[in-house]
Image 1 (cartoon, rainbow, N blue to C red):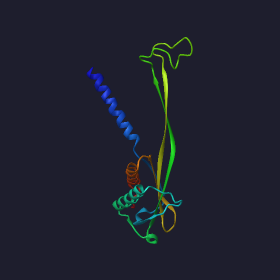
Image 2: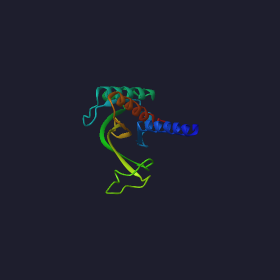
Image 3: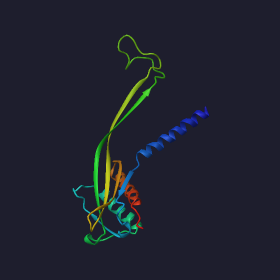
Image 4: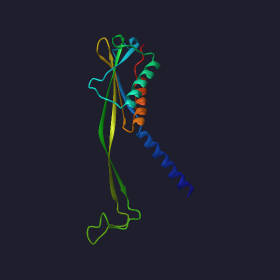
Length: 188
């Protein structure tokens, strides 16, 4: 009995960890291999091209985390035209649908609905399939690093996560920015 309990305990812990992993931020990046990243010492936070808005909490988290993470890399903020890089952000929220199917192999099932189509039922242990459909918002944060002098895109980072409340979104933005800036090529 203790072995069965330990098995279910371990399975429960794995399910919780898998659920937590589903809530994390995923990041992808790409860069121009010909860009001379060692030359980039300053940046400015440029306004988004299409006027995309974030909540005040999310906007503050984005700006603070960009400043903090780039400062760790030795890249400092500079006023407008004096910067080496323009950092332009884009945000989107897309509605997603999650469909999960579960089959109950009928342990303890004695016939009837959903298989009671007449005077007959199903055999003991007949499978029953359930479908669970959920909708959720997936947020995408894109940070474009544009050479301020040539106006050429040199680095792009894309972070994605499930949208939640304002504080949760702010934490996910901080995590995305940290992961994106961590992938910014070091000059050499």
